[in-house]
Image (cartoon, rainbow, N blue to C red; front, top):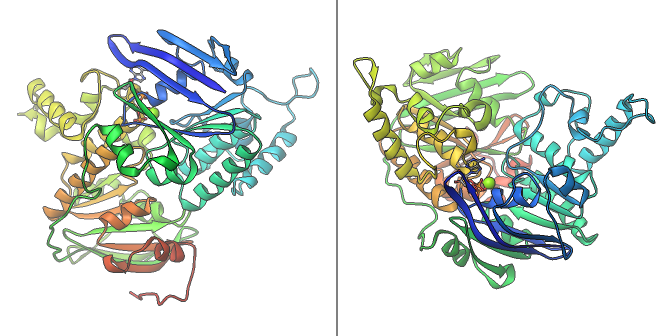
Length: 500
Ligand SMILES: Nc1ncnc2c1ncn2[C@@H]1O[C@H](COP(=O)(O)OP(=O)(O)OP(=O)(O)O)[C@@H](O)[C@H]1O
Ligand SMILES: [Mg+2]
């Protein structure tokens, strides 16, 4: 279906692809892996006519092509789900789905709104999403927006579908539905290029894998003939060792105790305790109320009932300002709109929350700012062309690393992390885990939401499982298994629930 050879690409003086090759067979699901900034998205954008290449050839079904716009690629049967969501918040869901190819009555230009909404509803229902297609896209969570993106690509009858981290904001149930859809289309002869940092997905879904490192082609393997270790080795060029670093934190006294927290139509009667030096994870499916609970703890959303104690004292958290004052930090799941100022440089983003580290007598020291930047870049392995690069042009995973660099300097007493490793490569994930562990060892209480169960099990001391707004289990480390967590997350009973 596709053959790319000798592809090179530079952004000004920064060469990001060097003589890369890639080929895709008909009906194949081909994984593309590599560390953050390895060049995966760039290669796919060249394929899709969004970026031009400096050299090399691209063939589609044996014919050389020169796409100069995404429209041309689409006409050749290639459809892309981009890593960064392209949903327009003020348009309805149906309008988003049919953007640029609206259906009209003849040549009158009058939109067939009802019909497009009906089609949208059907496509989304197939993906397990029951929402009103006429409502504005801004009402959707990040995860649901991602499903709309996927629906958009599926609705154009493509022969090749490129998925650039389609599951980053999805939970296991949605992923299952997506995979079932992919497999069904594969049977009909559709080919897929699949980019993900989740190793489990690659092994369960894909037939072949191509690996990039630092903009270079490293190799290609059949999935049935390779292993987790080999892929990691090819990606990072070294042994990585244990996936989850060891932690030696002493769990201290109760930092946060919440009782009977409720918010109408979001969650009810949520109670738990979180101790100093402890990592508590909240697991659950999308819509279980996890994000809403932590948003209430941070003062973003009002509570209808319940009490909060911080260091043993009752407290009301009615604004994020108040939350920060008492020492709560919050890393949101939506890095694009809340985590980063995309038009600022990487250096500015890092220093923004770290004024005490970079200022002297109220003045910013350029030298200190650069030292902080250098330190963060080194620690997190952030790949930039320099401190002046705009946050917007960083690769997706590197943007996430910058968000993390921002809260590292704050050193809160309680840190809330919502999907901290979304879209981050294996090496950097381990680095982030080490940082979380380090904070816990220093006595910070950590509340982590994660949809990746291996991560929950590898990192958390306890897991709180939620289903439809209620806590269904509170499991200690030795009782956590993927099956058990899924059981409670899907509303299962019977296994003795540990009452709090
Ligand atoms: N528009 C751009 N302008 C300047 N540099 C860019 C631009 N787009 C990408 N880059 C740079 O190209 C390199 C490769 O980025 P790319 O987005 O292809 O990485 P990736 O493999 O998709 O990473 P990730 O896993 O984080 O998504 C990065 O160093 C990035 O900073
Ligand atoms: Mg990318």
